[in-house]
Image (tube, rainbow over all chains, first blue to last red):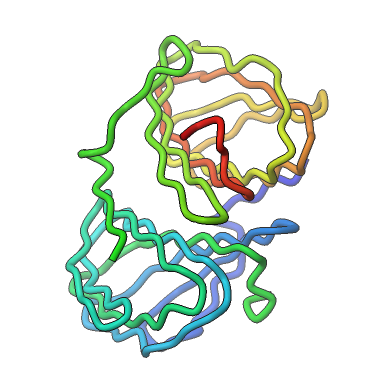
Length: 106
Length: 106
């Protein structure tokens, strides 16, 4: 059985002020992020569908020019190729899921 | 922007002793489960890849006959068509992600 323990997964600082851990299946990637307060997520886009889940804290997310303040329990579906950016308002924990696999995060 | 607030999503009792909420994208479904202690998940299989994330509590998961006790931070990749079953040891919260969309959960 493919069981992972998040506390034992390598943490990567892909952006300054963040920690990220990843689990890859055959068809999906799950990303576990922690952002420090004030950290910006630069605008970007990718062909993967993304579902963003805010577990704790507040995060300002902009998708295709529209900005919303997200908090615990917020879920956002980001379509393939949609331009998105953001900024951590507080320390926050976010789980992103992607299809297909984010080969760039392996 | 497709923003959902979990606290405002309809909760469904697909199994006695559980609550489930769902967010569907175009290619993925995310399921937010709460299990009461002792509730069994009957063995089943589906063609969707599944990634199970235990957010709180303990859950005994069996995949293709192998059983592991999962806790907070446990992540399991369940391949398409793998037979799986389980039992909540304690009250627990689990997030499952699926590709493709679980049309049966719409």
